[in-house]
Image (cartoon, rainbow, N blue to C red):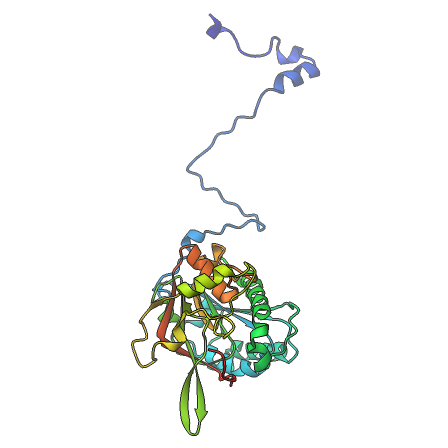
Length: 351
């Protein structure tokens, strides 16, 4: 008979005191009816949704309108900036799909002023044929670098480990400040590149590799002859000799490649290849230099950055390559695809 009992208070509401009514209604909830076919619309301006599932890095980057972030750390680079922006403006990848990011740190020259003037020049589409880029970000951050930028100090062996640690920090600060959810590719490009193909972005993304670098050479004219010098010895293939060497070193020691102080026996991509041959030939690498790197943005989003400490006895770009390989990403070099660096006129003695 229980199912026939009335459900409710023991007296009519008109006979209940306010306290009795409050006690009875305290256990009740307002009924809610859901229409599961009704879309949920949130108009609050402080709330946003980012769908990274839609962000892809594919060989058809132009057709898919994939956005590229070009990043360049700068220190005392005033003399290189006009040429840097001349080359940048000639890139054939659609400029409205490119964002630029710069970090200026520890500079004693007019880097910031010239950078600002050059950015203003290329972004003025009204009085020039150069199509402006989508956006430009300039970050200022000093890291306490004290060594000079002359060739002897900058490329001397003693300065390498501290310099590479600071460079790694600069890259990481710039990356975290500039990378946005809509970016599909990150293009690290140094300011002292002398010449490079206009279609370099399209050429590189067509390989569909996680991390890819070109060969870095330089021109040196002597006695009327063009000497094609090999510049970047940070792009290499690991050797058993180097692994044995690393096993004997303190974990905080950084191996600086290309110097006689460390005999690693590694294979340098700089000593391989020829720009006259097939530019699409690939070479699997274990370490890379930082002059010109194109990276799928999801590699960085996965936490692969530039270690400012000894990671497997490497730092900065070489540590970046080691970290990427450890995480299962592919690191590829193009030995016949040459980007030309300025001639630093270094003294002989190292690699």
